[in-house]
Length: 399
Image 1 (cartoon, rainbow, N blue to C red):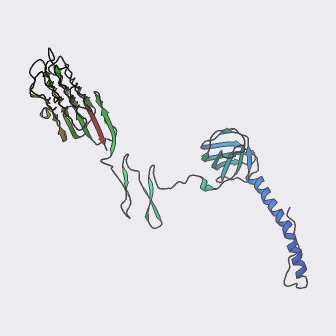
Image 2: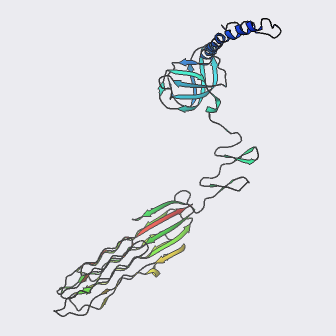
């Protein structure tokens, strides 16, 4: 109980003013202490509680048993925390409380931590800990300031759209056309399936590269230089409305063996009925049993055999370089100037270098030609050409 303060001093009683003032001021500390104890008592008794109901931390409606006679009413906000670990705490709004039985129901909207506990402490919380909901908007809508002191809602856009600023006017959703959304890469034959949201595609493809020529013959008596293999044809095109499409990836041509006069050509790469990229032809070999020719031709690449019914952006290819051999077969001469032709290149691969008194080198990238072999010294050595590169099909998908 609060103590009763003595009579307050009054200017209408000047004779006793000083004595009453001293007594009144002297009584204030004890009265203040009693008031603070009463406030604490009211807080502990009326607005806080405990519960041993076992619950797992989660959003949603909670019903637990606590003390009776609390001052909680429907609509007020409470915190519910574990006494053993106060970092595990929830906040929600009271939807029901029976002061006679102690049954309390709270709609939990904010949670921190996880776990199951039965040592809850309960107290008043402030409403701003709950999620803020703006009225007037549908799912996925955004608020914006339409004018001074007026907030409006922008309806949700479609998937993949972006928000455009329109100055002081309302923002708007626009299609994000031209955005690269995915790349599909085929190094072996398969089926292209468009990614959801694809508006158009750009395809790069190249046929298999041709193999390089060899140094061959029944006996190795003369120097020689073989030609390099031709590159497969490279094509780049744009297409729209493309659905599921069969993809063929061209195989590389093998370099000529030292028993063969010519290697094998690369095979075509194909993108459904839209485009075909021709493979490269092999380089010509050099016969060491006969007088070496001055030029041994490189394998050709035939872009005019390739087709494209879409919007062609680029088409290129490169024939294999010829091999050069000196026409000098004197027994006293050391032949050191022969070199096989380089394989043809394209934007996706570099051709193999021609051998310098060695076998031809393999292609260094997709669809490139293999290098031709060469031999310089007498007696000569039979050597194989380098293999071409496998083709590839790359599909760039844009929204």
